[in-house]
Image (cartoon, rainbow, N blue to C red; front, top):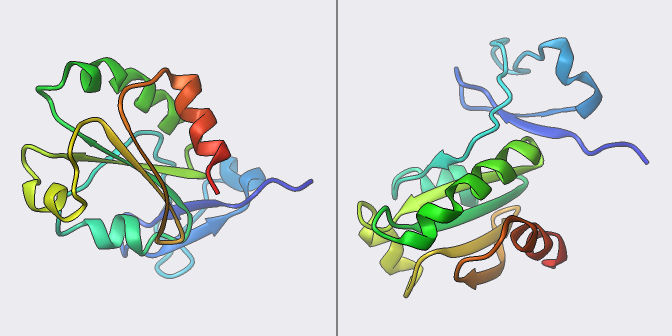
Length: 146
C-alpha cells in the first residue's frame, strides 16, 4: 500500500502542497511560488484569527489542544503532544490554543476544562475529548476516531 501524501504549507505564499512521502528527502518546492518547503515537526500555536486557516480550511487531519500554562496536566502532557506532532508530521497537524490568551476562541467552542482535544478531518470536527492521558492513549483515540 502506498504511503499517503504529506501536507506542507508554504512559508512564503501560504499554499498547501501535497508531497509524496517518499519524496520528502528531495527538498520539495512549493507548486505555486517555488519556495522551499519545510517539514514542521512541532505543534502550531493558533490564535483566534488563525483558527479558520490553520484548522477549518486545512485539507487533512488536525488535532487541536485547548490548554493553559496554569494547568498541571497540560504541562505534563506537553512532551507527549510534541512527540505526537513529531511522529505524525505531515499526516497530522497539531494546533495548540492557549485558553488564557484566546478566551473568545475557548468560549466559542464551549471549552469547560483543559486539556480538551478536538479532532478535525478536512475542516469537520469528528471527535472531542477532555482530560489528560498518556501518549499511547492519545494516539489510540486519534486512530479510532471516525
